Amino acid sequence: MLKELLLAGVVEASVALFGGTSRRELTAGLRDPRVDPCLEHNRLQIESDARLVDLDSRSYETQVRLHLPSLPDNLGFAGRYGDMYQMVRPVSLVRSAGIKQELELAATRANSALLLPHDYRAHRDLRLDGGNSRLPLRFGEVLPSIGHVYQSRMHYLRSARADTRMHFGLFLPGAAYPLTYVALSRCDRPYVVDGLLRSKLRYRMSDCLVVTRMFGLPGIPPNLMSLTLKHVVRALRRVSGARLLITAYNPLLGFTGAAFRASGFAPFAVAPVSYRYTAAGEFTTRRAARPAAIVRDDFMPNVLTVRGIDRETQKEVMSRVCPAHISMNEYTTNTTVKGALPSASCERWQERLREYRRILEKAWSAETMHPSYLTEVDQIGPSSRGQCGVSSVWLARELADVYHAEPTYCYGDLLFPDGSGEPVTHHCWVEVGDHDDPGRVVIDLTSDQAEPSRDGIVCASHRELLSRGMNYVAHSRQGLEDLVRDRVWARFLLLDDAIGTDLAGVL
Image 1 (spheres, rainbow, N blue to C red):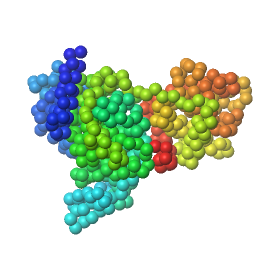
Image 2: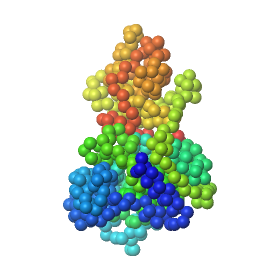
Image 3: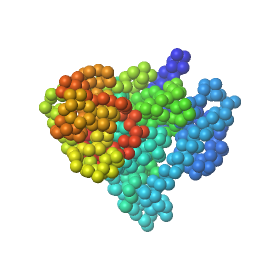
């Protein structure tokens, strides 16, 4: 309780900084006094260890900062700074070595060797100028499968967001991978919108998109990230009905928000941060399905920032924004939206499901099919054969994103107790509702694999389906975030690649 009161006092003092000091001073005021002195005490060994894994010292230091909150409180004084670093050193080295390995591959596929001979400067017209040398840049969408690599292997969190809806980046000529990467999701945290309201910005959650991951390869021109964000905003004006772009930066990890300031973002709140660690001491995100053995929420807060997507909204942001304080209670309790699916009998909902099926059919391929079906000699059957897993993942993300539902990815069997059809084993579908509730909704977009369901779509309560002679029996159930580590995820990413911009009109 004492820690919470002390932290609340620090946060309130930090909020007060908005009105009387610069943003740079705000960031400095949110540095945690338990972290920076430890880093300075161990500076020489930190730099030596960064060279050991051949990673730049800034990226290596971020891993150290990220794992220091996992330590017990009794290590947080000057006499133990050496011990503190030694305790987080192994996990920092392992994660940094993994990042370095992926960076080498990404640099090759991004053609970043083109940057080596010159000291380039990026211009608004997507041109790199290096004196007598010039290089064109291309801004565009990043394939979801490549975005997953950036999120799960190179970003300092090393954790992919299952709810990512847009991936953007800047590319050199002929490159498959981008030099810079930005991932966007819909806003799904009510406390963020509450912070906007208290900051005198009256917008709904549906008006907001969130920058959830941002990354630049080493050695890129210094202003390339802010340039990327500016082009993201321009793209969103064309393909999105959103009004605000929201993101956060964490001063404890050494971030200053410079790229956000240069891109027109303004701070609107400070919010708590929850640091979670596995039993092995490795950081895991709040959303991740991995269990957390250690949870710490008594460190300094994040800074939440906002930018208007259209020009009128940006003018409003810059003229009205007034900082707010998001409390720990709001952060821990006001985190979900209670959504609801339309009635199964609603014709518009049925048409939406049919549209989903049409989108999926265009993207199905041998790459997205479960490999067990590829070996069958007899390929006669519906086009949905072997596509139930990837289709159900895509549907689960759609239901969570658009309707704020809490879908469950189910794996099991579709049985016909009355003998009206042959069982469909090793099947996948989506359910919404408690697993033991007879009224839970079953949605299956590949039900034409069963003889009685030639239209390919099932959407009804489990109770009603039983009355129709269809029994969906789940052997395993997973939430959306669990699926990032499931074997189906790699094939789903290929499906998402194939769907591509077909979803631009939905966003």
